[in-house]
Amino acid sequence: MTRAAPCDWQELIQLTEGQPFVVERVRLAAKDIAIEGAFAPPQLAQLAADDQVFVAAFLKSHGSIKEMEQVFGVSYPTVKARLNRIAGRLDFVETSPAAPRGEVLERLANGEISAEEAIAELESRQ
Image 1 (cartoon, rainbow, N blue to C red):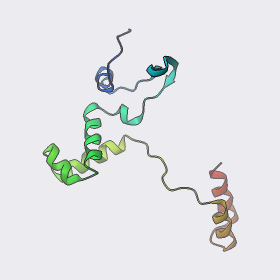
Image 2: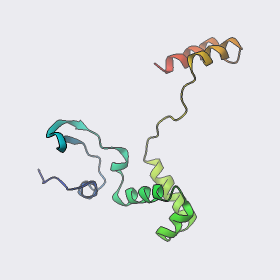
Image 3: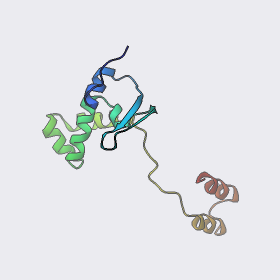
Image 4: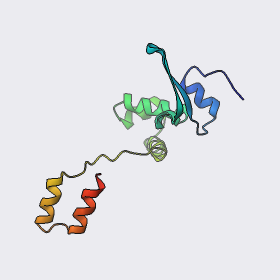
């Protein structure tokens, strides 16, 4: 079954009813270029439309749960529960950078880690 392309992400989310989907064609309008393949949409775009609105409001409020309580007319625990539910649907990028090679070798020299641990740490960054 083929349908006309939705006009925006929210229409697409409603159309797919929250089911996973793959984007198969991307068009760069400014350059009149189309790319075909199988592209997973960004994680935030895969959230339900109301969750996307909630995340956007949270960012706009600079993470103020108190402001979110006022905007949505809900309690602190309700805001926290919804944030936790949304966070549970997202994969997070590792934010603690790997230690520099010299630091790993220094910790090895000081006896803070074993040779096996140093090797594992150094190999994990490749």
